Amino acid sequence: NAGVMQNPRHLVRRRGQEARLRCSPMKGHSHVYWYRQLPEEGLKFMVYLQKENIIDESGMPKERFSAEFPKEGPSILRIQQVVRGDSAAYFCASSPPRALGYTFGSGTRLTVV
Amino acid sequence: AQSVTQLGSHVSVSEGALVLLRCNYSSSVPPYLFWYVQYPNQGLQLLLKYTTGATLVKGINGFEAEFKKSETSFHLTKPSAHMSDAAEYFCAVSETDSWGKLQFGAGTQVVVTP
Image (cartoon, rainbow over all chains, first blue to last red; front, side, top):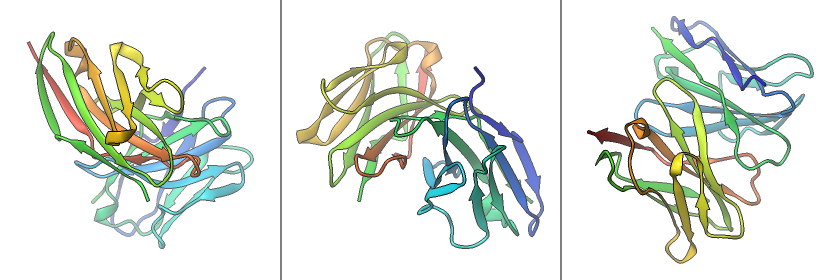
């Protein structure tokens, strides 16, 4: 049973480009969560999604960031017009409905140059 | 509103010695509490969690944690450190009426010396 799969593992983007981060949840998991980890900091919640539905996006920056979890395919975190401050590790996690404690993926490390 | 404070960003322990990582939280409702471990360039792995019931929780790799409501604490311990315990440890809290959203502490980096 594969774990939470994130790709790419490393992503380099120039300022102003778009970054698309993908997350495939564990089999049987219908809930996906995205977190951001800045250097020397803990993880910060960004968004919580079910299939075709955003449950909680209280941690998402108001501009340039969006997330989706379509009926088919992986969840996507999209960052438009990236800036240096977006450089971070982005972690995805998944769980069954109303489960306590998730399974995390290995993360995507975004570097904006 | 909830918050998590981990005392000590770096902890050094000798192999075989006690590991003690401190975590205090604030929460307006009964919380769920978690400890995660992160090895370099990897995702977070759940060590243990407290939901309800017994306040002493046992997890993987010999770790345990005790929920003390009066002290709003959830400290993580392991009686005897092993070299493989070197990693970063995160305490997290989830309020019972806020499914899905975890508030993480800033983390404690553990170094194990021979």
